[in-house]
Length: 321
Image (cartoon, rainbow, N blue to C red; front, side, top):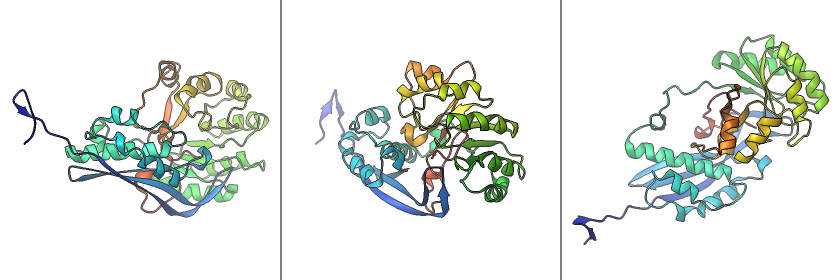
């Protein structure tokens, strides 16, 4: 007999059940950036079950940030007690997760799964729940680091399918400008570049004016994380400087944008949650009347078969390595 409250029966909501596992997907081709290369991509998969329905989420642990699939799964298994019986209580659930470092991919996978589950419970796709357009925002294709002619061939092949291209630089061979020049010779698409921390201040100051002449829209993370020369490069650069590896928390946002960057590249996995709630200072940095803006991107790169959830992209970039 159910308990009653003011004449109405009290019902107990069924709990949200969680399962997590790590998966490794082979890439279609070796993905190369300045600091490493990879032939496979690891993801953590979350399944949330509630009222006979299952929501799925995926996150990609990034070794650069001391994450891996096993650690993500272990963390998620400790989160079961925080889920309760209402998958729509997103703030309460996410705020109640254990405070553990290096768990951004796990948190992103859980957040994605909650949104997927809520969509299925309401019979609406997540894009409708979030008030977005069906077609989604424009995305780009990342052209991994290689010699200039090779990058040009791959850019030319990808160009018909995308609205912009993001070029990985940082070869430390004096050929980065030639890489961009070779790609520009085969396509008129907007170009972005990502150095992944592999230029010195002098290299950046020499290359950036030449990149501006080739129509590059922005340069992402040209200097190593925390490099004191960031303010000098920002002041001299004719193209906007985005930061990525330099920002790990919302507390980093205001200081980095104020001193060493124009906009910043917000990774979906780095941000962990689809619902960003920046502090007042961070919000000013993200929404500055001076024209700064945040680009949001997923952590996926390459072509991992079966890894559909991790290959969505928002705003300006499909890659954030």
